[in-house]
Structures are given as C-alpha cells and as structure tokens.
Image (tube, rainbow, N blue to C red; front, side, top):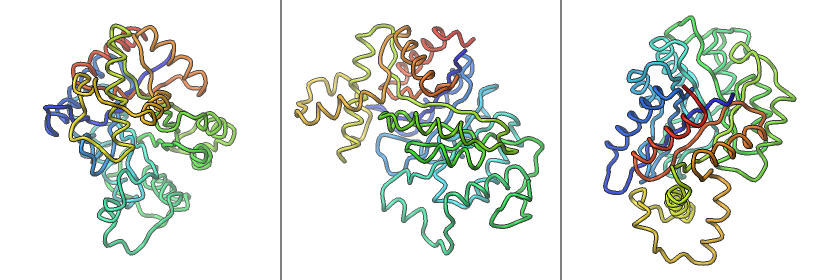
Length: 334
C-alpha cells in the first residue's frame, strides 16, 4: 500500500492575500486529515511574493491544534539560520502537546536570497556545521547524552516521553549519505531535482544506514509536485499555471500572485522559455486520478518507498482540495 502525504507552500492566489492563503492551508490540512493522508508539512520560504509559508514552526502549532490525527511537520526548517537548541525547544513543546503527531524536517538550503540570509543570521558569533547541528538536534530530541553534541548534558525543556520524527531533506547527491550516517529518516525532493540524482542518493541511504534512537530503521519518502483533476484537460490547464509560476521564479520575475490559467494562457513564451517549461515538467505529475496514480506508483517503486509526499502547487484552493480528494479516492486512503 502506498501512503500519501502533503507539503503545502501556502500559495497566494491571484485576487487573494497572505491571510487567505494561510486560512486555505489550514482548511487543506483539515481536509487531508479527514481524507486519510498520513502527514501534512509546511515550508520555509523567505521573501517570496507568491508564498505565505515563511515560519513552519508557527504554522505547525496552529495546524496541529486544528487537526485530529494527521502528522504535522516541517518541510523543512532551514537549519543554517537557527540554533539547534532553539529548534529543539519549539518542536518538543509541540510534541508535548500533540504526542506522536510531530515531524521535524530539516534542510541545509537557505530558503531565500542573500539579503534574507544576512537578515536571518545577523549577530551570530558562532557558526556550527550543518552536520554538527544535526547531531545536536538528535541529542536534544532524544535525551541521549552519549551523542557528540556541542553542549554535552544539555537537555532542552520540556522533557517529554515521546520523540518527534526527524527527517533529513535532500535534493542533491550527498543527502542520502548524511541521513544514513546520522540515522534520520530521509526524503528526496524530486520536485527540485528530477534528473535521477535521487535514485543514487536513496541507494546510498539504504546501503549505509546506521540505526539511532531517533530512527531505529530506515524510512524514506519522495516528494513531487502534482496537478490532478477530474479530466486530463483540466489537469493540463492547472499544470500550465504551475509552468508559468516556476518559469517566473527561476528567471527572477516572480509575480505578486499565483496566476490563474486564464491570466497566462496567451503569454508569449520565447523558444528558450518553452524549453525551460518542458524540462520543468519532470518535476510534476499531471493527469486525472488514474493516470496520476500510475505515475506515482512508478515513482514510489523507483525510490524504494511506500510513501509519497505530494505538493498540490496549483492555482485555486478549490482545485487543491479537489486534487487531494481525487488522490484519496483513487489510492483508497480511507
């Protein structure tokens, strides 16, 4: 059986705003909870006009309070900006309030541009390597003093009986080895790098996995964008909105809102832009529910996993709700 989870960016739709985007994320999480999805993660993006998801821990607390069973997580906390101790305290508060429902996904990317990076890191006098921060998080979350942490014996409060799941996010060739070495769960961002790198990174993860208190046995996922609708034609229209958004992001011309298909259908793409769009289609699954299911099953087999994290990054909260309803039905999640 394939389990499905969701990563939501809180996109700001055309003629909408940030508050409405965050409310839409809340409703999507509640709907996913009822539909039988396993996890609902939120992202950390800074300085992006089309995305409202900048602080995953704050949004996670809100979502956990407004759902019942689904696991709530970060996809992910960009660890380079923060103290591992501070991150651990926030996550442990959530774990204390919602035991067995919290995932901490961590990544080494900046989640924004150079100016944002500088603003987030102002005043820092000590910088730890990403690898050391992962070790620190393991020690802080598990309470295992034998882990080689930066501050041996330091135990963040609150002290709780359960341990959140720790997920390493990867989009390159080395992430699998790091997740294996540190004994964390591992998710590969196929939606960022669909070129095949993730298959080798996944092989490396399974071949070199070292069990830990946090993760006693290997556990992996793959994440992919998805435009799913009742018909192939509607799914293609939604995907064209995604095409335009991704092109604008990558070319430094981000628009203030995530555009409706009707607003961009006559856009005069150059030949070079059309080629970029063709390449970016490898990041997204497009189709009706049956077609999408076949593509996802193939992706799961390639990545040796029984869980896929779907990013329904399409225009319109109603379209995102419909997409996950169709996936729940075709995968028989309930």
